[in-house]
Length: 501
Image (cartoon, rainbow, N blue to C red; front, side, top):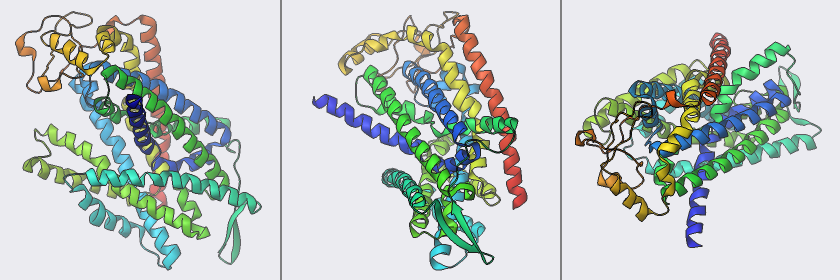
């Protein structure tokens, strides 16, 4: 009973962490997408996103489990080699660059709207962005330990649920007010923000279809938690096979809750403000002058300011290691400072000329999404059965003592290539024995590296069943075309945003 309580507690903590990753700043953009697509296509795109993510993450987690990958990049290197690892790194950089740019935009709008509506002072959005980046975000990125920020971010994650509740409140408030959220004066005219939510957009069927396709990558990205999965497999306290079960359960619960949050915010938000909808949903309330919506904007601004260094930290750690240093060393820390400056500058330069966070999310999700969200997970689908058959001994471990015993016995054995049966590099250290992969065959002493990790697994693609292989390839090609269309359409929106500036 006590052990089960410990398992349930870990699942609950994992669920909360995953939800805060899924339903962060993306929630602010989803009502705009819903209104633009109409409620029918919004339902379809959310169902597609949830189902496709459940499928992708199932096979991705299985691959992380059987290869004992320490990170997403590590998985790519083990399955496809170092070059693919570099491609994945670039994809992650591009994806997170989009998020960090959106963070700068959201934080500045929150501060500007709060000051304007409550103190009557109009601040320059551009100057506010510069001040936030230089005086708040940059100093936060210089912190050597992010433990305190992580704790604050966890508490700040509750803002998400407050925001959802507030959106529902304003929805029912508008209903009780005969479908009018508020009225305001503009050029001596009285303007109403009234409720509306079309079933379909008024554009042609072809345009509707293209809009649907262009938002698929970004909607998929909303539910993405790929980089966290290897860490959860490592940190969950349980026998190794039990960790896999716990992680799958946590993910299913998280996606279910996140989908509910997105649907509630998207549908009630789009219906509440109607045609007055903005890409940053909280900005839609600006004409109303509601104190609570202004406070929410300010709270969200603080949350994304804190999230910026948290998102940047693993990226700069990886880059510092690429230069042959550790971020904990003096030289590594100095390199990380220059990386901080480069990322903040790049995010600020784009944010200075754009306010369209939906277009930014869509563009960067389409550019980075093919390899990051689709290619790797569906490649894991293709080779899933082969991985499981070659590492099935992992599934027989029932407790940590047995796990250590099995791995001690197999310490001097090797992984055989799935097609050529040639040995590939494997490494073990006593410290890393617990939870490492199960190996078979003889291995020469020189095949162990100094860090104690499996360095590469020659992929089993050639020996996969032809039907499974073709299914995976067709799915990958379809999503490649979707991402190409997403880049084209979202790039057009971004260019329009530049022209308006």
